Amino acid sequence: MAVILPAPAESRKETTRNGLFASRRLGRWGRWLLVLAMTVWFLAPLLPLALWFFAERWSFPGILPQEWGTGAVQEALAQGAVPAFGRSFGVALAVMAVATPMGLLAARAFAFHRPPGAGFLSALVFAPLALPPFAAAFGLNVLFLRLHLPPMFGIVLVLAVYALPYTTFTLRVAYGAYERGFEDEARMLGASRWRVLSRVHLPLVAPALMRAAFLAFLVGWSDYVVTLLVGGGTLVTVPLLVASAAAGTGNDAMLSVLSVTAVLPPLVLLLGAAIHTRRRLGVRS
Image 1 (tube, rainbow, N blue to C red):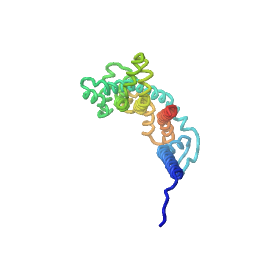
Image 2 (cartoon, one colour):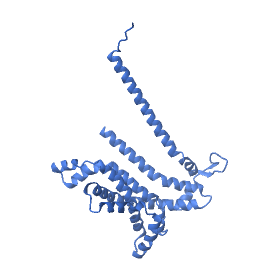
Image 3 (spheres, rainbow, N blue to C red):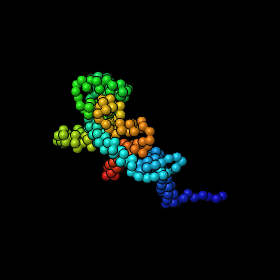
Image 4 (tube, rainbow, N blue to C red):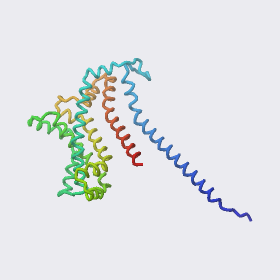
């Protein structure tokens, strides 16, 4: 009768170690493949825009443009792309500057203080999600005209209200995992309220604050309806130029240039936020 002896402990450890290394390698390759697939899925629709950017003539059945040049860029510049870009960027930054701190205050109040009528106030904050922008802007533009408010002020005010639900919800989720004990400990050690805010509170909610600011920027950057109605056509932004070019025919090249202009700032901000988060995680590890 044969007796099977157990494998030595060192051999079992080596086998387990090899299995763990193999599973980690497979997991790492799987993550890279997933990132590659998502990148291709996201960038593939942008490839025709990039080709039209430098196309002078691109007719069927050509796979690539028949003639190359920068005529579309010059035409977009002649249509006022640079001033429109500046106005869009200014509106987006203003909406972000207003809606992000308001969302921070609202989320902290709902998470820790529970003000009287919290349910009603929460429904009021999230009400813009259920109210069509066209209906709100169509009524408010008359009110703003009678009050003689500048178009820029009215647009930022309305868009900040529409961005508030996104910033509040994003920061409310972050406060769900927030530990106030860090603030109490800092206060016990003699830190002032400002020092607790700048050295404890804001660093802990910084990732969520960054996401909320990005969402508010998107609301201000990509708006068309509110800018058109409240601005009365006097404040021409990139979305208005894109819509105007899309309404015509034969503007494919210029439309592509304007579309790339509309996509780049959010994409750059998103990549910057990802790099910043990755560096923070690297520093912590």
